[in-house]
Image 1 (spheres, helix red, strand yellow):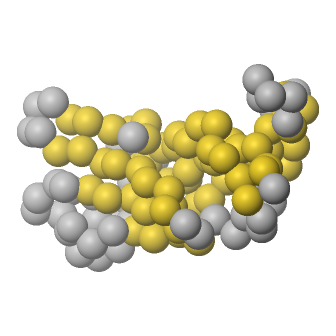
Image 2 (spheres, rainbow, N blue to C red; image 1 turned 60 degrees about the horizontal axis):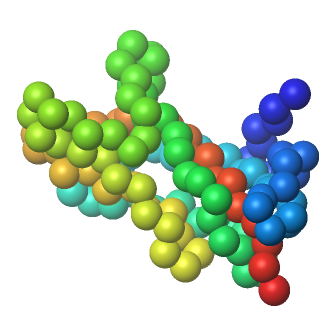
Length: 114
């Protein structure tokens, strides 16, 4: 059974080097301004290496939903994910408030390193 939590949880799987893979979910809300990155603190203690990062973004009523990262080839907008230091950064290059007030989550899967 797959478990998702905002707390660090072992997936029960191991990476190619034999280390345990951990998972953590970060909920977020996109701010009121276009072009302003949404920054989430991941709170992972100690060194780690990312195995994968993915998520979803959606309107508050769930009517419109996109996977993360996302590229819209129709209007050439995108939503990118970055992990830099203690921060997960969600950037949109949409114009005209396309993603204002959207909500979502980012899933981090990682192994701990010393």
